[in-house]
Image (tube, rainbow, N blue to C red; front, side, top):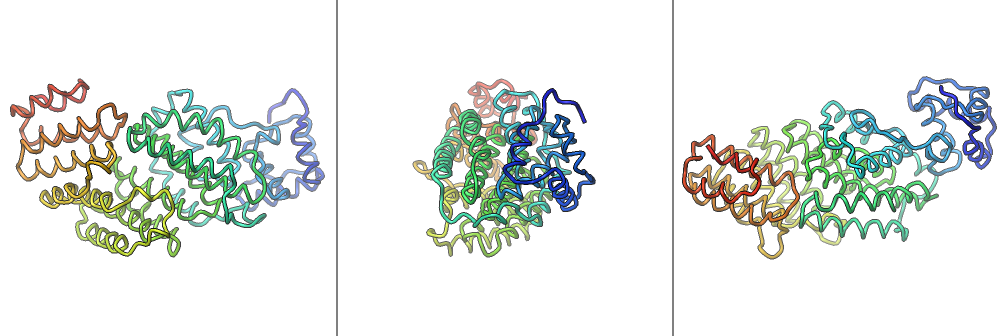
Length: 459
């Protein structure tokens, strides 16, 4: 413990509001510690020291907040009881773990978004953490939410939650059109100004709806960080958003976040983790997800299995995805899945067949995956490169280079790390095939404004 400068009047005020004595609070903290597996045994003297200004260990602070929250039937944050939100976040450890209390998630998201908005170096340098994935899956699937014990699950939308959802949908469209690098700054500003205060201030059953809307916002923030190449930050946004979705009782949103984690794990080469995350999304939403949503989850499983070279497993998952999509009822779908149409499913199939080395099927599904008017520029750019990969594998070099050029043109000012990676990977395929000396490839390299990217196309 460390000595504070003044008595903790905030803790005293919340204890008074909860009508608990020092002995009563100590007993509740011991019960909370036993429930959450924390080895602490405070007594009334410990509470007196905290009220006098001593700060306990972080695990004890979490138990204090949880115990008072359980008594009051609402979220109690570290800030509210005088122990403050963390001013710095250990991105390599704290935020990648699945928190036992939702109040901890709010504090972690506060610190994460503050660091991100301030361009902290750790946001760029922190990597994907494979060791945390099993704990996140089991934490989500087997932990019980706390605040639903104290109020009915949300049946409607509070005005504040509706505003968050509407803003998130608008920023999602910007992300699709211009890439994560464009929308991230706007979404971070909105998180700091609106979402964090809403998470801290909401009371009662309305709190569950705010949690659900904030989980949606965390999923979009995670996706934009992923697209911008900040993989450690993206994983941590997803993990904390997953905790919010559990607290809100929104299993389908939780499934979406698990599937996003699967998508990212697959992109980073963590294929077994991607399979487990996609299957966890299906398990968590069994009997709750719409056919469209489940089709998307199955497509994520198919892509991960394709990356592993499991042609039979991938084909089976893709076939089930197509069956679910064919039987979908649009009225059952949540708003966020509206992007997943027949074009999107064809694009997922194209990725699968590319990774399995089926050149003709890659080209066939890539051609089906784009509508020049309806498909966002980022998606068109990705699919053009997948189509180029298929053409190259089929021996059509000039067509492949033409499609790659089309991808670059579509990208324009797109701020997407993934799009640059797709083009760089295509350049490596050209090099592996001995094509860098071909005139079409040299001409294409000359059109690239990114010198590092152009180097992939030059011998």
